[in-house]
Length: 133
Image (cartoon, rainbow, N blue to C red; front, side, top):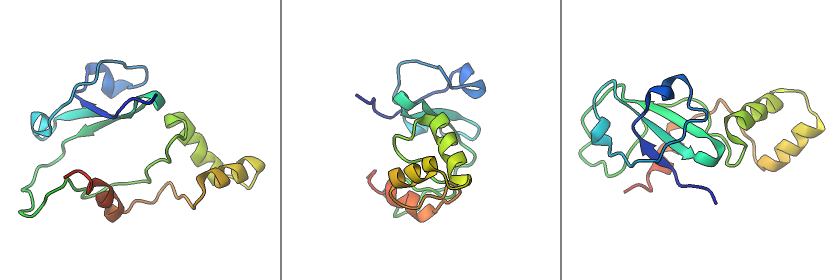
């Protein structure tokens, strides 16, 4: 059974290598890390080892009508679900960039729709964030 996403404050080992790091997830309210330069670790899928260090780069006023979190910028596509963690995603990107082979055909069939690892749309990210009311 897959474990739930979690947020926690980073440990010293996070910046160097999140691989193999294991600790009990702790819910962290954003105001607890809400100063410029602070960071937190977001674990999306512990079973696939997706860990992200999120650094607070700037803080601005909230939009007066904002009811959900919003993304202001980003880069790269969100990896497909169940692609095998960071190592599996790296292989997926290499396979997509290569010539047409049986492995690439199988990958394209598995994806089911076009996938561009470089594509990022802030509107798509905000649509996904809209569920957090």
